[in-house]
Image 1 (cartoon, rainbow, N blue to C red):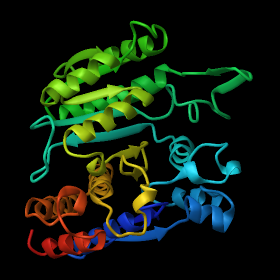
Image 2 (image 1 turned 180 degrees about the vertical axis):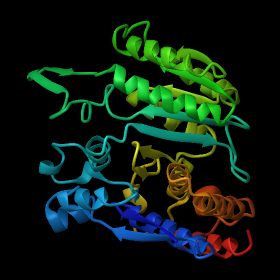
Image 3 (image 1 turned 90 degrees about the vertical axis):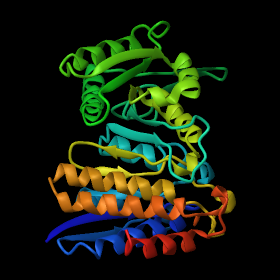
Length: 357
């Protein structure tokens, strides 16, 4: 039997509700596959970390995550943390930086039973996750911002060949498994050195994948192209901040940001994390939609399957995904999608489908 150790960070706001629902569904699916065992390890993060260790991402959690194959991370509400805990990186940024989770993959795909603004679409945004204009994670130590005077702030954007090369490889390898198209998004007409280097290196790497068709667009034009013709795009690769913005737009266009999954990876570990936030206004009401983090967990299972060449884990991923999508297509869903189910009722409905899919 293959055993995989998975960290579980429940997080803030709606995090405990949607993460608990996700773990319950995964456990139900895994029970049907005797060759695979998942060992879940709950770890403090966010307000739980502050209350227990005076740190939203305590060293205890980081050390424990080193011993896992990866983890499921609920959303955090860092905007509400005490002032002393707002100075450093937020929990997500800290884990991406600490574990060098350089690849953030965010699919945007229309789903049965979910209304899409752009009709049929199936694209993936591959976002460089460690530098660019996100100054909380683009320096070896400290943040890339300086307040020179009371009225003057300088924020740095960092672009390296290493980061561009490895994210370009990720995008091209993914494209080879899909429709073999890669779109590079940049702003090299204005940010000529920084995103110019990103564009140049991505094109160089793409030459190693002659079957992949490559084009590129400026970030401002790309937002318009996504709205007008999202169905034309396959794999989009871009820097950190542009990728964050585009993936939120794409998620909303195909249904809702609340449905949008993502996975953060390095070469050895992965973090499943929904693209949305902690929604503190509905926390504790048992009405949040858990699909985003559930599908992020499906992505994590696919990564585990590929990383460890374990076909059964891939079968678990497909079983979990189909159970979620079938449940929604048959009309059982949370209120934001027009249904009546609570978070826990939706999870229970999926668990019932597991036996029939």
